[in-house]
Length: 216
Ligand SMILES: [Zn+2]
Image (cartoon, rainbow, N blue to C red; front, top):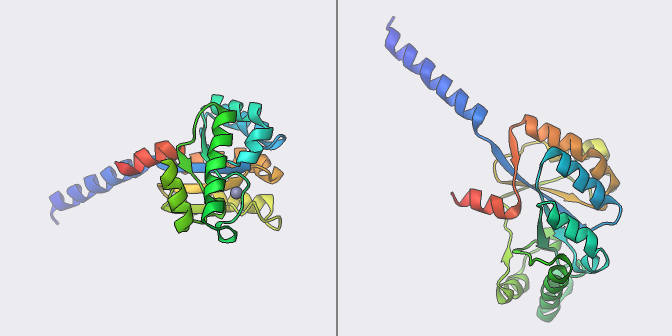
């Protein structure tokens, strides 16, 4: 029996174990459709406690009615993305209609937040030629997620327990985890979601941080 190859194999497996244990998994959590008068403050409190930064997909109309809350989101170190003006599906709109959704959304969010979103995060994750043209005209980047974990919280048939399961299963580096602000079960589960993801070795990026990470 030759010792040397065995030792080499042992060192190799130790080295890969150490790498696996220390390489963080970057995830980006997105919370859509707010700001929401009741749920957003609860989410912000958990994120502050857990020292986690996320991205909020803001609807322009809601920015107009909840400007102070939107400013609190920004002050909390979170990123805000343009999630359209009134959350219409692009398939129900013509080119001018899509352009209005993108442009009015950007203007309303920027005015309320005091900062301009860098990213367009389309309602229903629906991207067509009109969406591409409207964002390009504005110099706004569409966020393309390589992988999305859908919590399913937009379906009222999906229970709190299932939201936790879906949001923490098969999570890989670069995954966007999709939530909605308006679902109370999401707010109730989010601390457990973060705890579970941290146990899996996840670190939490905003969209801009994730884009930088994926460029490397
Ligand atoms: Zn939405």
